[in-house]
Image (cartoon, rainbow, N blue to C red; front, side, top):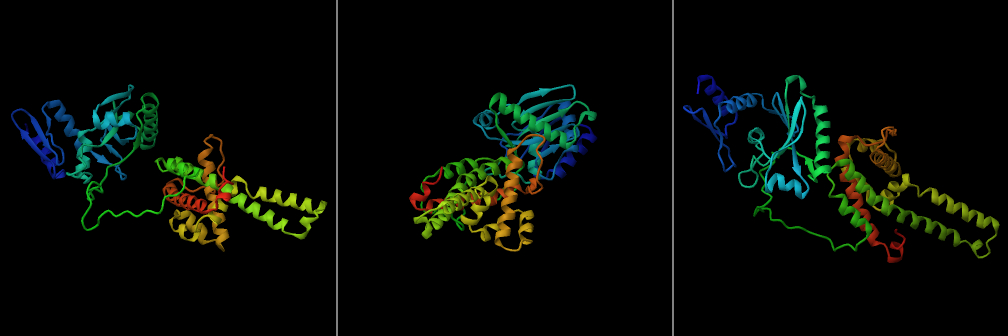
Length: 383
């Protein structure tokens, strides 16, 4: 091994301090011993070693720890969701080609040395429970420097790849990233902080519970919000019917109800019609936030844009109206995927959907518990 190669190996050793590079000068072989990985990685072909050196010199990762790149290769980290995906990732790891053109080659890789090195450099491993070579990815290997796509175009291609994997072979993956929060071992309980869960008495089953359980399984922020919103949509009409029935009862408590004339009946019909208007789809979030939850308390988990909006509102009713309108607008924006859909401008920005989901989940939980506290005859008003 010449002096130039040795210089590169020394540079790698300086960069990846926890990785040991063992050089056999006579055979141009390099053994790489990586913490948390049982087997030694060996590069014993000159061509492979030259390629490895070139790639490591250019190796970098984006701020979200999701894309690992060299000049001619992009890895997009993914994690398995379906059983077939777990099979090719963890149980019987298998690399396979997905698509090939003159410009690039796209493959699934259950693990790769370059990703492993980035995991080590970023502390995204734990020798007890998370190996640095446990990260899988979609690999885009470019044929020429001129064909390298920009990050936005790569993201769109990755979406197409994930669709094809799921649609053709049932290989369902989600986008992921390096996990650099590995000090806590999820398989152990610290003696100083024993796991001591506390639960409320079990709720009686209602359809809202089934919808909630389905919603919390969804990872994609937009679809998760839409799924949580279905819980609110399910319970909202119950609130409306209670308010409607109460308004009608109050009217029927009048003495005129004993001898109803045309005017009384006409007024009763108008009351029923006005109550019907209050039960519109756009008003469902408002009536749920008003009747079913402690809005003042839950508002602490609202996304920043909505916190700012309610800070400018005059009273609780106005604050609730502002949040409800934003939830309804966001729901419509997600539900209506047609390309010519016109947004209202009230939608919660995409980057804040995770916080909105935390709020929507809390609202759903509170609404389910509120529903179960109702007397049986009132719960019968539900669908």
